[in-house]
Image 1 (cartoon, rainbow, N blue to C red):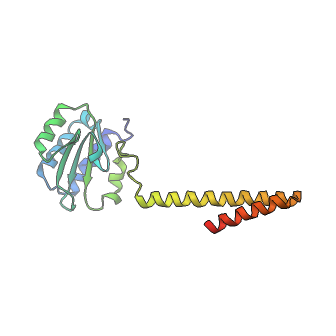
Image 2: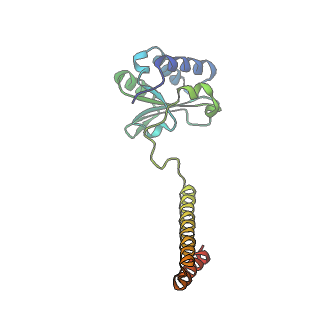
Image 3: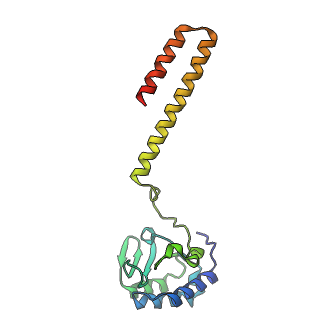
Length: 182
């Protein structure tokens, strides 16, 4: 994965974040400070939303957030042990690390938005609800009915122009059925 966010920008953001927010777990501060001091690791750090879908990710929460304080996800295993997380980060410096930060109004933070990247591991239907799917089906059905009605009207016009009364009556009945159905 190529990141458009530089390690230098990530470092500045983490420093800003640590200066403006108090974290629920002090070990989270240690981990972020470790990252700030290791540019080679920061090259592989990606700030994303919903880190739980990533193969290797850390969720860190500030005190002003109602989210859980700390979680480390690795290949579908989850731990709240920050020391294991730190150990994993130190041993796997070249492996991508995805970080989700939870803090007050994170979605409105320009600083966070500047380093936030698209999460490539989100499921395909992540942003689609059942209501969205039903609305889409209803819309497509309505569009198909409208298209069929328009096609029938054009064929009715052609039958009138040709003076074909049988075809005209057949098509108008079909159009009437379609309009009653919808």
